[in-house]
Image 1 (cartoon, rainbow, N blue to C red):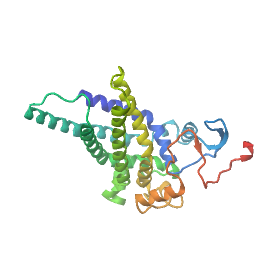
Image 2: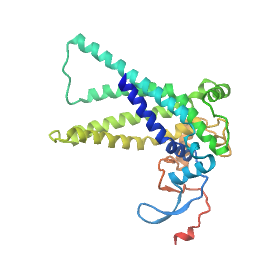
Image 3: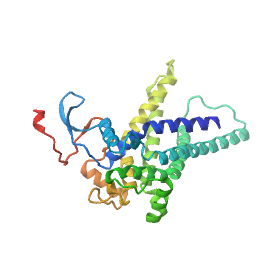
Length: 303
């Protein structure tokens, strides 16, 4: 019980700290660029025309809505985080209790020190079920969070309170409105999880020397690296999911002429791929000007 409470408190703290970052990221994902590009330098030191990064974007939001405006959508996101942590823990606890019953029945007390591939599959499957259950239950709060943020574009107040947002979505879109963008989000989570755990197992088994004294530390590092790699590969699913959550919802940021209306998440994926925008919002610092976009940037300054 104490572990669950500490996880909820830690998760809530991280959610509050990362809220401005997510706010900026979501607005960039939907293609909102209120500030013109500036002359800057890339990682190689070359002068380029680039879009403002995280801090400039956050300053713009604060100048319009104040510093408190940077935490728009925090309440439903906190609800999502707390509920997701509880559901995730309950599902894993159920599997652990089933293991204890099996061990008592068979009389097996000893467990493998080095996990086999079968055990990796077993643990990953359980983690997948726990994450999927948490995502399914918390997705309505995720949708409300995204729409609360995207309101900034058209200066609407349609999704302000949690209760009013629930009533609005149910009245206009029915139950399915709460699960807009769910499929790509689930697919992205599942693919990322399996990719991360599979790569980590291969690295820990075949690339690292088991005789090294810091073996446990090396394995934790490899898990973090493979997790980062997997999240980069599955980022398009996150982007498509967020776009579908706000698509054609009555907000300026999700309707024509600002944004096209997608018939399905596959249609959204194909259109983003065609435009070359599958990584939009992935970087918050070195942001190049998208191909096909026209901005008032004096390129003569680059010469």
